[in-house]
Amino acid sequence: MTEFLHGDWDEDEELKSKSQVKREMEALQKLGEELVALAPASRAKVPMDDELKDALLLADKLSSKREALRRHIQFIGRLMRSRDIEPIEQALALIRNTNQAATRKFHLVEQWRDRLLAEKDAVTAFVAEYPEVDVQQLRQLIRQAQKEQQKQQPPKAFRELFQLIRPYITTEQ
Image 1 (cartoon, rainbow, N blue to C red):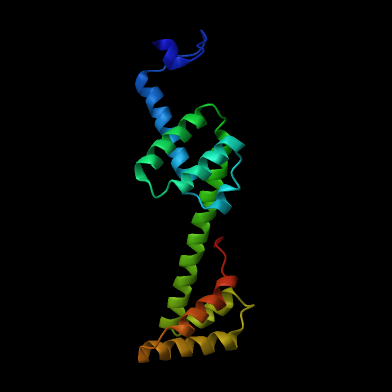
Image 2 (cartoon, helix red, strand yellow):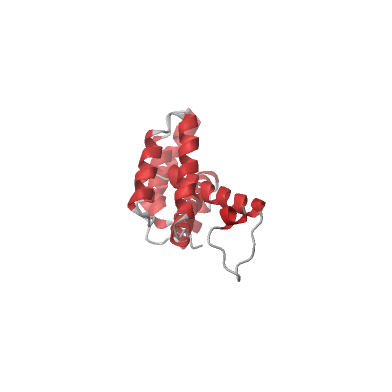
């Protein structure tokens, strides 16, 4: 029984409890779930062999069949047991950080847009921080967005203001 749980066991290797083995298998399955959830463009950045890629493609096809997908994710977890998962984990961490940075930037742009519309001195602060912005266009869009809000019109200038300030804002602040 212990050989089944531990595979090829060396004298130096510590015995793992059945619970520890189960936790490790569940962690690999969670990693597999995360790979299945990735968009194809992000998944292409993750280093993996052809067998694992094929399994993930099949998981995409099984997305409408809940029970089949659950069993297939267990299979992906079993596949991952025989692989070096460190490069996969590193690639996933990089993807997570990229997504978090994009979210932070999005929120920062939203905050600036809202501040520009609400505060009179916000334009001066924005231009001081981002001097390369077209001030005339910025002021014009702010006025248009404020008029849209007052008249309860569709937020066309509101969106254009977001698009104008987005390229200037970075997340390193």
